[in-house]
Length: 224
Image (tube, rainbow, N blue to C red):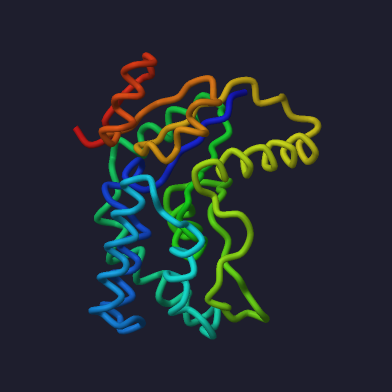
């Protein structure tokens, strides 16, 4: 039995769900359009450059949810999936996921995107297991703050190690996860890509493409 790990944004989706969520908040008047859009775009540029302050970004993107109830946000999530995520879905992404599912592999979605976005998208894609950046809650209301170590860059390695330990403890009667695949588009995922048995660059950014070519990693496209 193998473990197949998938990044989300610009890997399984034709776009970035986290950045799109920020735009969606403005469209729904949950955030001030002018100032929020400008900062959202700057954070996204920092992410692409590999210089993102993830703690600062999560505090920014979760701020509009402060004091909102779980139910209020669920209504927004449902609309977000329908209006924004459905157009990003890729047939080849579903085919790739199904290939690993048919092979009997354990499927794990790993994304730096926060749980408000990541969890419903993971469910839409058919994942039973996912790891993402945590969101603070207080008695069924959002605090507007992140929680725990962001699932980003080296943080993905830390989260995966913890997940594996939990898997071994809870699935004692199951076969061990012998080999690991990881699919990603971003150089921000090099810490995890460099540790797995089968690193795969999916429609990679220029930095990751060069890195993959130099090391002979598989490069594929889910959009072509």
